[in-house]
Length: 287
Image 1: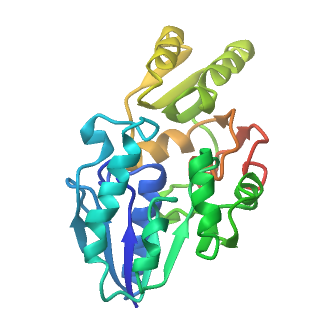
Image 2 (image 1 turned 90 degrees about the vertical axis):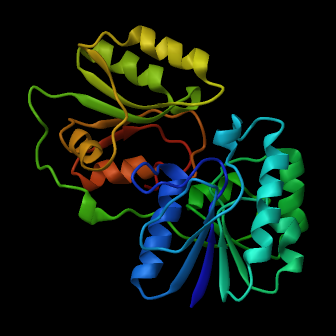
């Protein structure tokens, strides 16, 4: 099949630094290509995906200095899709990862469109778009995501996956041992809760992640807790480094504060043989 995969324009797609949705887009495209499908990825300028045809379109929100929740981001995302549209010719199916943004344009596309929904909640205007275009094909990341988004008529649930060949299994943690947390330094990820729990237990915590736009004040609170000994704030890790840190940990902590539709980092930790201690929100019990 000839398949178009549309990445969102939140940031550039770079295979060695992809996390979250970008990592899913990367693995879907690479996986389909490996199965002899003719795949073309559409992503912002500066994106790369060796071995898979990629068309660079528009400027990412990150390059514009915008966060996805910034008031100007909606117009930037719409402009991105308008630049992608002329390229969507001659495909057998289009796989969209841009949430609701493509839906108002679907009527002008003769090719079937499948939209994987990565979010867990949308603003009132965005809900109206989903309700208006309810006959489209929507895929949820989990049963938990379906419950959190009752206004979207999902056709199926398809869990996110990882390349388990990259995850090295560790039968036991590294001694003297530490707990791990990894992700975006934002309030809904519960980083300060993980820190408090580890301090109360007298354990060591390794924190790895990146600062999220709009969460600068929260990140400052995290940095105040990091002493380099019990609470270690480490540089962002990718690839083998990431899996080594996860695999050698006593457990991975994930005390989130939101109805997460999935938890890709949890799957990565468990693939390394590391148990996960998490909250019971969203899809987490399912995972």
